[in-house]
Image 1 (cartoon, helix red, strand yellow):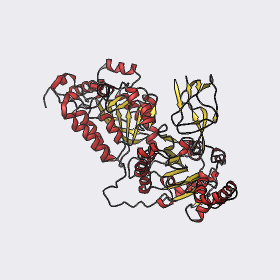
Image 2 (cartoon, helix red, strand yellow; image 1 turned 90 degrees about the vertical axis):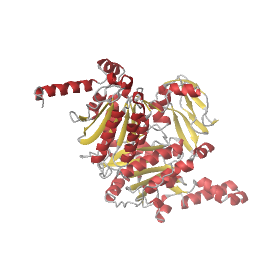
Image 3 (spheres, each protein chain N blue to C red; image 1 turned 180 degrees about the vertical axis):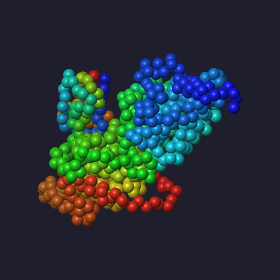
Image 4 (spheres, helix red, strand yellow; image 1 turned 90 degrees about the horizontal axis):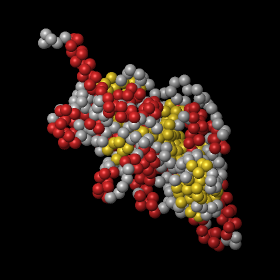
Length: 70
Length: 521
């Protein structure tokens, strides 16, 4: 199981996967807007998206759990 | 001469001794290594060096210790192979620890052998590569071994900045076998089979109660992503040694030489590339991967990245421009918006100092919004760590060329080498904004009272943003003040950088008269 956490505080501006999707390592799963920049949040491992803990427009803190990959 | 001694008799004696040395810890131990996917010390050296070029010396040196059964355990060579040979036809020295002999432990003779080959490398000024596979000092020999251990540290330091030193971690390593690598220029680890720790899981458990495996404590992932100790990681022994050969190809043999120039470059120095305008969005809110920019600009798209998974908000690595080795430092907008922080400052500063020591010109790709804000960064010491970049760039006398791509905001600009820091050529793309703060923040601060007093505050704010942007947030204002030497089209980046490098080829680099500076550590 791989947990993808927010690298810094910001706002989720796009969710690019849904539960059940297969992802590869380094694939963009979310877009986070922070420091006036829209940045890709990539999966750190290959697997299946088990859970998405955030939605578009959510404000998140650094370290918040965003996506679980199994 | 004894009558019974003949050429023939002594040659057979020599071959018996050599065969014994080459057998190391014996066939069973060698088989076991192979089953674990590891090669022996000699097999590794064979892969590292050009075929048949490696010359082993001191292969008959053996432990002089007698206590604790050492007389029976000792093996010619004392668990380390030392020598010299060619890599891509260039002289390189090496030592390789043999973990089949007493765990590759550093006994007195073992340590003396390593020190001896380091001395030789420094004498003739050629790079040295250490293949580490050892748990550290040899306990059977008591305190005697410490002289060799300390001697390695002393020589690593003496050779620093004179010859390139590369440490290759090829097994579980602790003690001297991790601190010596820490003193060298580059550390390469093998995934899964190499670890680096100061105190092992057993000691940690007995002292702090924490339970952790050796791999979790100091495996390749830990050191390439968390500590920044391992510059490169390879999948296995073979790939690892190939990586070392590739790295050496970018480096000069010593601080008095320039790196080898790649011959027959099949990438046109005049090549322009308009795709750079799409790779880098003109919408400053959109991130992009700076490595894509670098690969489009350098020869044949080859960027040899160092520490690719540590402090990813900055990129460092070697590439070539018209065959000439250059050191690339670049902000990475897709990570932390490209902000500088403690780890990225450490990563970049050490790389800059390596390049300066070994005559490698620096090319800086700048798109930096500032330092990463927060209590954590301040308390981790961003002042002290950030200062390392200021120091390293100011100190560096190699050609320094900076390209401003988009954001050149605030204090972080100085940390990326700008005009006041004796940058040799400051280039900027037309969309670049060289400002103290981003426009909106600056306007909010400068016109706080006026915005509040305005009939329509938002309309006034927007008008001021437009005016400020037009006046200051562009490279033309900076160019009019000679803070930018040349505004170039993105597509012209490669030819412009190559022309600048050629112009700076014979740059004078006066030596300062002092023992050494005092970089904030």
